[in-house]
View 1 (cartoon, one colour):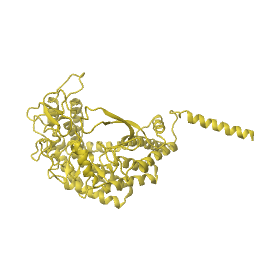
View 2 (spheres, one colour; view 1 turned 90 degrees about the horizontal axis):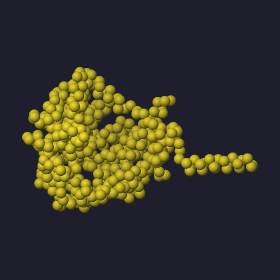
View 3 (cartoon, one colour; view 1 turned 45 degrees about the vertical axis):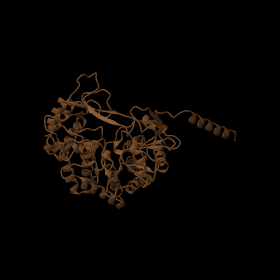
View 4 (cartoon, one colour; view 1 turned 90 degrees about the vertical axis):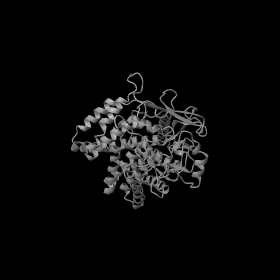
Length: 495
């Protein structure tokens, strides 16, 4: 009996030591540790943090405050990533990797929340408010006073393509349907894809919002939401979801619409010597006003991204017509350089004036929406921090164009497909990183980080001190869960 008591005492001492001292982060975590951490974090998100299966982007640690791009009400969830689709996608990944039915249940809850808030037309707004009467009050009393976030100043009641707000849930429903083959997800998915087809202009472009409305004047400028819109990925995101839907569902109309979208890149290029692109266009294909800080101008950053998109379209289709606009665009980017000193951290302005090609800068003054004033001129001093000067490596962009141009149509397609497959490769994960992620999980199952929110949305948020918050970020949850999933996949491959 005395030896038994000594054994019990020794075991208790060892347990105390293990509790008092942190685990050895250099030890390789076992699969069961990873599975336990994933389940704990997911259960907390799905059963404590979520609102009817949906999520915003960030939460205070005690869950009393929540934010999307701006502060959200308790009744709201975000459609625009990072939000509900971001969490739903990682639950799907966890299910496909582990086979644990809880994950597919959590993924279904996210989908059900999105379906609840799907607009009758088939798309989505930036957010869903489960208090249907409350969203107008939120706009009137809060969102419409958020200086700097002009996309929230007016409640249209329609859908938006801005920032992946409609294409992200469509993609999520597509992924969930392909995993479950559940017809409950096929019907809203088809409504979303039909909405994308219906909202496309005959010339291949898409508006920022649909159904079309033009009721909101802002800063003396006409409503911009019906413009042909490249800004924030509107056209590119629609093209890519249509191509994916065609590959998985087999409807050739999706591919035809995607090709019309690609062709819009060609017809919307501005004439030489300013052969670039603008963020948005009016019905005469001329650069148009967007928000008050987005003048009708050429955009160097958008032009660089457009060049990359056109190269991708060539690799998808094998059609060299998508390469033809690029040389003129490269020439314009080279002529638009405003600084060659490598010690100064910019090469280009964001905006250039049509006709003169002079760099065009945004300024702002005031204290709130009521007394705000924006203006644009050629002075680089005291800039409003939107579209400031930044770095573009035009030489590298040209080199990549020359490389892609040298590919035959067949080789270009092969490279594109190889790239798609490579994107599915499981990245290497260091055991120390996994161990640290597990050790950082709190007793509830939350990863707590620090982030900043503006002290006052109603004033100049770029001059007002920002408040540091300790809380939960959807992006951190997604990133940590993806790392743990990848670690498990590598473990499975090693068996």
